[in-house]
Image (cartoon, rainbow, N blue to C red; front, top):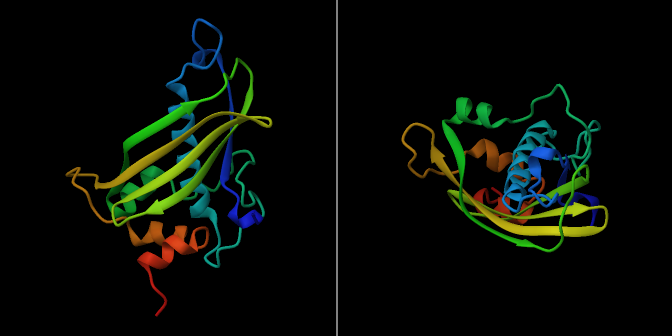
Amino acid sequence: MSQDDAPFSWPVRVYWEDTDAGGVVFYANYLKFFERARTEWLRHLGRRKPTGGGDAAQGPTGTSAFTDDPGLSQQALREQTGAIFIVSHTEVRHLAPARLDDALRITVQLTDCGRASMNFAQQAWCGSRLLAEGTIRVGCVDASSWRPRRIPDLVLALIAPTSPHIAAEHHPAT
């Protein structure tokens, strides 16, 4: 797997608010971690050069600290296109617990992109230990009516450099 094929990753620290009475991350909080990572994945795509190369500030894995460049935020997507993404399906398999103060790495890999939805494979890692993995399906809806709509061309254009096999289905070469 080349570095360009590597999944996007985002760092997450485990805080008290993330743990249950047993001192481990409450199972549902992995969905929060996955959501944050997908949001940062979208921001990262918005920071990429139109040629598709990773930017020097973040690189292709997206593990650096916050930057002043907001990329493509969820709010900007809504304002520019009238579209928002909503989660329509989740499936998470828990393999090992994360604990208070653990430094996690949450990965995001786009696995499929339809006309109005995207599927992601996501994982939570602590060092070399896989803690949880899941599949998430998000649908694109109109922010005003909440009716399904096509994924905006803006998003498809940003996906193209990182997922050419998916992007080619939506924008065949002319």
